[in-house]
Amino acid sequence: MTNYKESSPINLNPPSRSKNVFSDIRNFLINKPQKPTLIKFESEENRKEYNRRVLQRVGIDVNKNFVLNVHKIGVNAPVGYIFNELLNWNGDSTCWPNHVAKVERINNEIENIEILPFGLKKYPFGLKKSFLGMNLIPLFKLHSIRIKSTPDAFDFDNARYLLYDCTGGYPIGIFVMYVRSPIEEMGEIAQSQLIFAVSFNFYGKEKEANKLVNKIWESVHNRVTSNVLNRVKQLSEWRLQKMANDMEYL
Image (cartoon, rainbow, N blue to C red; front, side, top):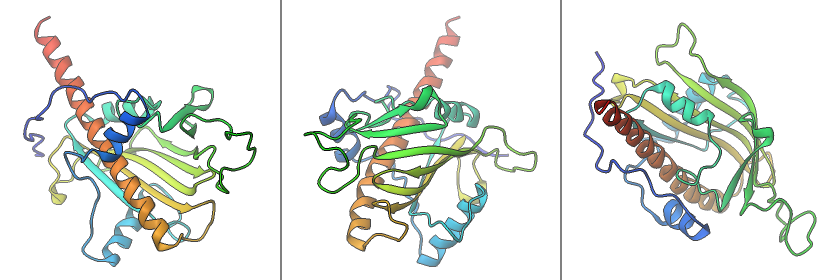
């Protein structure tokens, strides 16, 4: 039987909400996450094999996509609860740098999302097509490929996920937010495992970017993603603890 007990959260307060661009930078770029989330591998071959399993699990052609990196964190909250939080994602600045990269749901639907740099819908200074030669508005366009709300009967890990095709001025590729039950053989003990994976190519090109661009982008992406996952964990566990405490007083 799976043991869901994990050391009690150090901080049962909700994460602080960003109020402006500067607090976004502090909370999501400068701040060192409490728990590391980037999955590391002993060899490039192990990484490629793990990537293949991720893509096959969500039904993506492994010959046309390459997973740049995968982040994972354990959350002491039910899988269904976390998945509902993902479905309600609207860029709330508690868990997302919404002042730097504003989330705009098209027609208020989770299926189609635009990420706007600093909330800009058009280029400044009268520019119409690009800024310094870069097409960055929108930064991302997320279009749903598949939303897996109900696990299949044969799923051993109770998996649910949101899978997006990602286009725009900066990268193109796929983005998946995936939540499942723990797998004991992998040493997972938290009630749920929340996973973010990206397969991005850079600057609107199908080919892999040069190593310098790749390295810089990965560094920024990894720090932001790790902080986002840590904040989702903190917020989810705080909310459940608060609901349990409220029930005790009824």
